[in-house]
Image 1 (spheres, rainbow, N blue to C red):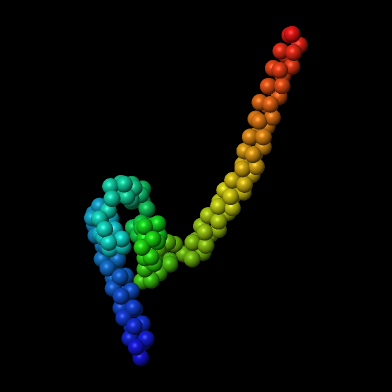
Image 2: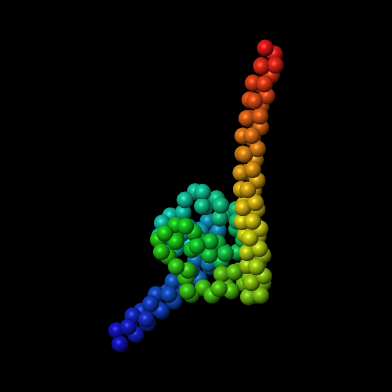
Length: 153
């Protein structure tokens, strides 16, 4: 019975958190919205860098739900062990897109990450070869200079 009461208490806390976030989403001014979101999610005032960054994102038509998602998935939030709010459904967090569109975007992101990692590996090989060739060129230049001085003598 005690575990049942704990589960009900946790559900109430999650519902309260979702309700609080819905209230934050209703705030009209972007600056006030961001300040309330930081206070609600991270428990601190917003820093000037974060404020400028998120105000620019909102000015470029980024949805408020996506901004909330970014804040909850930030390194600071992860360090504080704040998990994503269960009151926000996955589709809501992806700014109202359909699950198919979300999966398609995820596929594009995974493909881009794979290309990035592949390029990183290949360029690491080229960097290694470039370093070796540079070393060999310097060694050949030194030998050429030594040979030139012998010939001159």
